[in-house]
Amino acid sequence: MPNDGELVRQVLNGSRDVYAELVRRYERPVFAAAASVVRNWHDVQDISQEAFLSAYQRLGTLKDPQAFGAWIVRIARTQALKTLRKTQRQAAWDRVPEDPDETQDSRVEERTEEILSVVMQLPEALLQVVLLRYFQDLSVTDIAEATNQPIGTVTSQLCRARQAIRIRMNEGRS
Amino acid sequence: MIDDRGSEEAIAEAGRDIRRIPPIAERVMRRVVCDSPLTTPHLEKKGVLKMILGTKYAAAAAAVLLVAASLCVMTLTGGESTIAYAQVREHLESAKTVSYTQTVPLASGQILRTRLMSKGSDLLRMEITPLRPDGKPYYPAGPSTIMIADSRLGKMLALYPETKKATVQSFGKLRPNSRRVGMTFDHVKALLKGKDKPLGERKIDGRSARGFQVTSGSKAIEIWVDAATGDPLLFVIPTSQGDATIRDIELDGPLDDSLFSVEAPKGYVVERIEPEKQNDSSQRRKPALPARPG
Image (cartoon, rainbow over all chains, first blue to last red; front, top):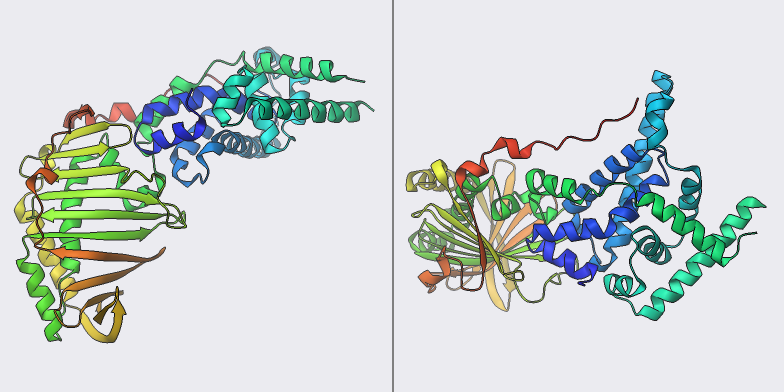
């Protein structure tokens, strides 16, 4: 499994198709980043798509190709915040009530939203491994290869991330 | 209180929820290919990448390339007020081949370094190396892209050495001709006949150099030549991002025809792009997005 840095270099060297592998690798983490901000799956998809396109167009400005994962997640989150602000402004003008029948199935679960908001507060290195492990469902070995880190480091990062998430969640309940 | 197992289950549950969203890779890639043929956006501002990777700009790009080659050659000429300058111009005008290295600072802080070789007005080869802001190349192995254009054959070849991929494109109806290139040549010559003034002497790469500033309209470029021979050493062209430079200039050096072959070398996977595909506007349409509620 080529690591992120290798894939980014191949794309920059003209292999556009390789970008699909980066999209597949990070689409779920990017969904999670967007879903931590907006509350609608359709918006999550649109934001994620725009985030990947924006990242593709700016790929040459990425100083550390190995950091693609954290970078794309950051782009998605920024994009989602912009969308949210725009939606809020629009809503303030329109004041059109949502049709519950149409939105019910596309709502992000409240519980998921809560977890995501905690996950997104993790430091970048921990955030990346959590997103790959739990949202992309990659094995620890695959994460180690994708992020170019030893397996032991990934395991330890996951452990620290879970601990941080647990503390935050308990704080939220107390 | 949530324990470690509880927090892991909660995250895993959120992960499963997220994985219910349909994948978007295919949709993204359709737009990557159709809307954004740019892999190194820092080249976009210079309009170079579109012609190198171009899926739809090949014809115009080829023309631009040949114009660019002429411009570069002509940048080395012009000015009439000193003997050295006139010698340089004469030397350049009679040169059958020219090669040089151009560096252009980009808005992103990166630098685009291009080794350009031109033979006559029909053959052009550009070896493009993007550099990091600290001047180090992204890919130590060499240029990331090599672009070769032959206007006699109306063909352009782009090579990507690291991935061993190549694209071959035809200029189509916009095939440049010598008259068009000649007109551009004259146009630039007229620009370079602007007001010139001496800039004195300085050392460039250990050689004594005489400098001239040539002003045409609001643009003023610096030209530095060997004080003894009049050979061009350095050109400084101001841009909004800083100074672009041309160095390592060689006139009438040997440039083998094989350097300008528009046939991909062995081992490359070749993609041929036909002119009609380049102009197919239907490919640029954005794919439909799912209907939004409300």
